[in-house]
Length: 316
Image (cartoon, rainbow, N blue to C red; front, side, top):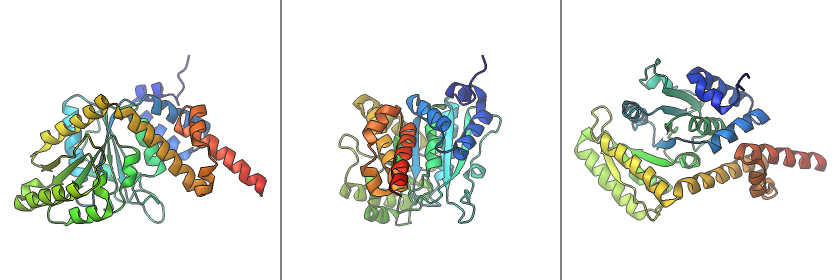
């Protein structure tokens, strides 16, 4: 019997080309039954640890992504990357094309990089980016999400990442900006990039530690470590890898891993319905019942959208 090309098994078996086609189909057929079914299947069968890298432009996120990718591949783990870029005002496509900045082996079947546009999301993750993350975390061992990083609104990364790594550059004053913007409440790990700069890097680390001490903590049972890393030289990279793994272990052992993803699912669905129908529409959406009936957020979104659209049509 011929395998369903829209099934998760077919995508896992088909390699990078099949995954690329599936992601293109998802973007082109948003809201369709087949799309929702596939994404909900992927959400139920997630296996990857999703690491989100965020921070302002020029801080070195792409270089750090490269370093992490190579380290995990050396350990035999498969890696998917969603690199989110600013959007063109005209085409809404990705402007910078992170895929071109990542040094990957095109023959390596266990590495996949997808450049995505932020579109109109100030926080950096469009609906299409989130859908790509959901699918890729059901295919790979690790998924790296490199956000657009506009420096003020980074909260969207919390919709998708299990572990959030905030990158800060020495001498940029980012720690004060982030403290004012409340960004210090988001990270699980903070990385001062370009550690080879010496004294400026050490001052930045001290500033960040001070900012963290004044910020509301994301979790009472996990204190975000502040690390200094130089991606080109590899300085501090093993420690970062260890802390990322330690955070994943902490989430699993404390029971927060699945509960955090459940919370993410609900927050994403609320945000999606609010964007489409406003606060009044959200109040009449019946989020909990829709999630239970559909057994997945994408089917729930489709069902809620159909119901609320029909109600609006009757009012007209």
